[in-house]
Length: 297
Image: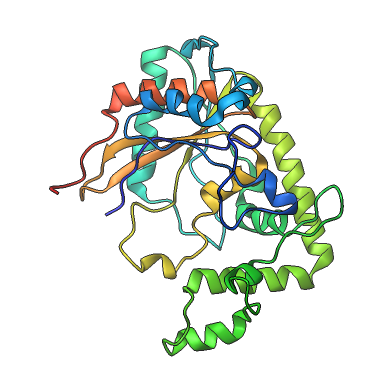
């Protein structure tokens, strides 16, 4: 059973990636980020300070946050991408309760937004992960990483092997490898998606500014059973999009659903405004109980 616990990302250029394997190359160096994961939201900031070391100066953790002055935005889903599952009704209900509580308790208005480009989150993520950096260096291919310093993996062949239970790779990994191959074949389409990603980044930064927080589902489904993600391997796009956009996110638990599975929400802010998402996470933890033991151990 999965547990939803408070965590923080994205911390590009703040927390060192030393020790990561495989480490990122090219444009992916700005997408690979290490952040703290704690049971309680109040522990995130002190752990982050330790992990960041001198890099913590880029953040604003010493600034006092007035929740009443935060401009809250809410988006219920990505707009209906064909690559991901529809957002579960119970997740939508939990997010609605958060909005109602914020409005009634803080006396502020949560603005509901619909950001059209979010519908293409998976495509944008895939294109930006394969794009060149400012020096023209191409990112390391995912199929090379699957080969683990040996021969590159041929995803179509691996798919055939997987169908008869002979592949050593998972279906999501094979599907990602196939997607990478297809993206390489469509250079013009790939360039358009990278441009769309940069445009989305500018749109998000303009929306959030220095005092905004976006409420967004962490995942379209409640904690899935083992192997069920095989059917929809790209549901991770709900979180992956913020990695390539360079936006900080704090995952906040909202208790358990009707079947005893954890619910949660993402709190998103503009670059280096982690102090806002951390403050809101602490606030919501007090309001909704924070981390809850999912079952008997």
